[in-house]
Length: 219
Length: 258
Image (cartoon, rainbow over all chains, first blue to last red):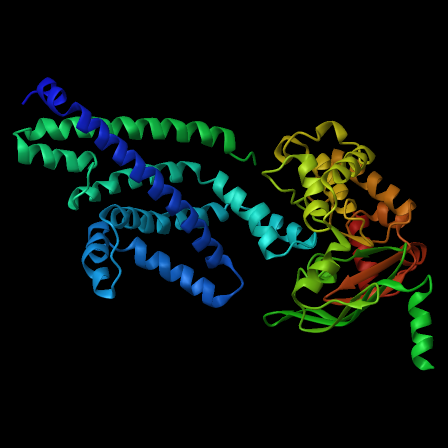
């Protein structure tokens, strides 16, 4: 089938698929961001068990393939009487893994903060949580905008895991499988999805650059 | 009876703001502070001098426990300072600190740098903190920079903001850890002028510095340190004119030659 034929036949399904991909990306990245901050605060906290737990989280989820995690969530959890919807399984897998990377980027961002500022905060009588909330996390975030932008793109690409479970509406990768089981879309069906992934990534990249320019800390 | 007398003593004008008793500190094998005892009274300006590596900066940082100690006691305005916890933070909030490298918060503008701790630590209403901060910035001569971020200011301006940030906490004393050592020569005086004014207004100050003219002019008392010990403690006149120890004489000679 040609591009025109595919779009005429499946255009509205591509739109729905694109929206599903966007939705999964936005939800997964938001969750990853929050989890990443929490894990990072644990990793720098004065309480050793928290530090160990935070490091453990990163070691596990940085080193597990997304597909493997999805299989665990879909097929293993029911043995523990935990049955999640397919959407939730995909969302969980695509959030837990980027969260580990998010924490790594924040840790790198923290290393750019001069130790002197931490000492100044302590000398002013700030406690650990004030220091983290007012000095450390804001600066770590500002200096990690570009890696976070990359992480958002990576998270979007990871949402292709959705194609491995039955979802309705499915995502940009799932739609290709759908078309190729109902018709002969061939490589062209992939091409349309690829263009949509690329276009989204380019927009994300541009917005990331804008935010970075605004947020960058003069030193 | 004895207790009552002790209490009375604490309440007199002369009760020390800062008291260090037999402080020992090691960096690994290296004994950096050797049984240091020091008392700073209200309104006193104590200037600590000595060769580099003598422990004077470490001493200054020990007063608000930015450095851990191995033994000894630190007492702030009659209250023993613990090694950690909420009480430590509370006592630190009462003692201002100005660092060699300014250490302003890089992501906040000048005004926010000054109001952050009063608002967050002292729970001062934001409006009041702002008014006081602008007043303080005016006093140190940088009120026109309030909306800029630290990196847009010169070193001298940044250090004056750091002084305003310390003052905003209404501290009982301010520690200055080599406040002019990172400055270009033409900016040293603008910072020393602010410090001189503070001293004249009766602020209790501990100043680690290499600025001998400032020490001579402003100090009530000079502490000369070498190799982790206080070797001399005297008025500036006595210390600079008649240093008692050989090491102090050598030190003063070595700076005269330049």
